Image 1 (tube, rainbow, N blue to C red):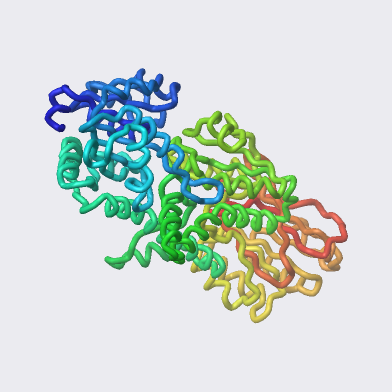
Image 2: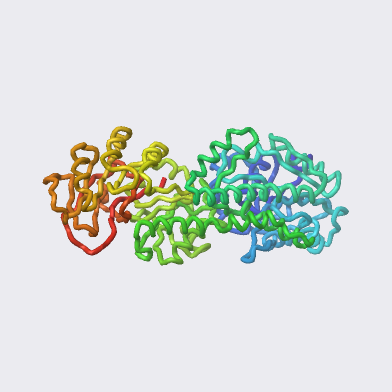
Length: 570
């Protein structure tokens, strides 16, 4: 068979020209005559023009290939060796959807001849090839399995968007229905796989090997996602924890995030389905799936909590979601978990703008009934950087500061912290990088005039706001003499005058006391409340981007202190 293919006496056909099938077809087409078949005429038209519809392969790769692209099933009659690389998704009930695979089997079976080979690359549960696919091939062709035609399984290992681990550089697992077919199939792939071939002992072993590759990764990511939830409650940076733990040689480097796409987010369900047929409930696999399937909702709700903390009217908010593909640097939107984030926001009446430099607006509309924006329409109350496309990774802090009030990703870092124990303040300030201190002088354990010089001495560049109550004026006078703060907010009812200075605001006791941070570009700001007797530490506000201003004296009947600022969650 291999000699006839290389001599051009026989042809090989690849059924399904997506991110798996097209690279295989092109590589083999440098060695033999190949028929590239896809049921989508529009995709076939693009490939005839040297364009990869998935945007994974350059036009240069198409050159020098002896390949005929077609959507006409009759053209498959000229083939003697078939490679099936069609999707194997799940249905709405998270059960295996073998529709595309079984349809491909019917198409191949209609053209199968004595002596032909059929190799499946589509990910399936163990036993699917011989129990579900082979009977259709026999029925449609009228031929007998093993006697008239051979079957093998060689699972795909393509990693979309990865330009390092490509088809030729990844070891290929191969298998056949008998010793002869196993050797023929392995020999075919050895023509194009420089990393080598691993000959599995049976088709079922090869099927099982593939399914656990992605199930293992899914479970490990689920563990990281659960850790991120735990550490978020503890106010611990998950990524810093993983960085520290990663210094041990045998620590596995996985990270929290959304798990979508047509591999990791789908394949485990094929294994749990088959295990259920044998009466076994796959507890760990199902638990991992439950965690990962819920991450979209979790991320959105973390954002909602932050908006509530900022005293936002939720139904008046507008959120920008950056990225909707299932992973970074690809155009594929299938089974994207970003959609879960979007729909969670929409369920609360929040307006959502979606942008993605790689996704097709038409495909997003058809697949999810969502509309993408051609350009940003700021300001936004929050930004969710859902997919780390290279275009987004290169954006700097100033870009986000000029676009939104809140930037979120799956691992939140608190941007506002309060402290009611003044003895811990300096320790807190040293442990993290804060951008501003708002201090109520009437704090337990330590007076403002003792604390402020310490803050000024240790953190001379940090803006400090002092808020006084009516019985703290003497204390405030002492603080003012020290020059250890940037702005002072005092009660208007206070009989003592501190002088007419630009950095002192007099507001009625118990009134709405505002200190504003106004962005130099957007001129916008938002409000935050601070309980009396506490210290407020705010991150993400830098003098580089912000100008300070104080309101005029005013009287209102709001019993809380409001500090106005714009927050950025890193």
